[in-house]
Image (tube, rainbow, N blue to C red; front, side, top):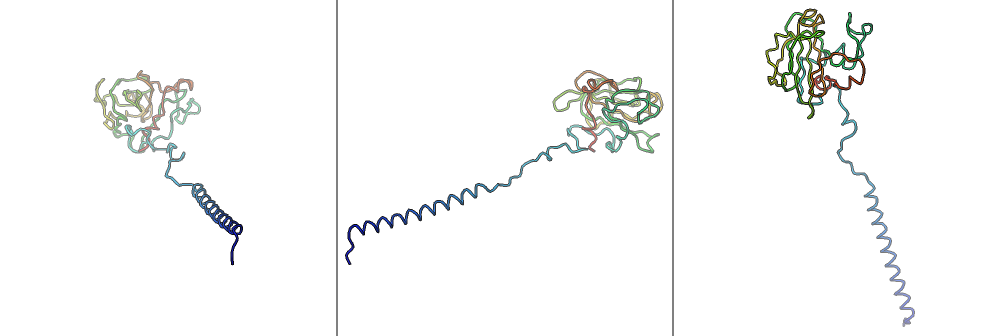
Length: 229
């Protein structure tokens, strides 16, 4: 049977349209799959806000070491920044009033009459050792914290136990001296314990208390750096 030229043209057009529709359907499916693949979230190992939170009891600076063994267990009475009055103090009788500039590390039962060595918490130079009211023996060391200078105040020493001289280099972990005998001139009549204060900058300031929070801003919470071990 002969097919006219017009019919041939129609058949060719239909064939072309069929191919075009098939191609369009295939292309649409491919794009749809690609989009779906892109929309699937890729799981990556990333840090979270929780990872960046400070963990209590961990040292913020690995160059600092605890002044006493089981240091974190000894901080039970006077914390950094605690407002003290003779009426509200955890220590009685109390003679001071103000915001506590340091952290007090208490002795354990059985340590009342034995030598309790105190280690340097950081590496630096000895700036001061003397007897001061409220402390008995006190020492001050110049140190560096995250690139910034600080002075470290150690209070209630048996002064003659500090063998270092002014200007001597001290390494973190070195024994600096021993705690003074409680309720004696070695501790200025205070209980046997270590007062540890971190003061910003280079100037020597051994105040154990300040009268307002603006003054307290010149100090740091030493326990954040040395209470982790």
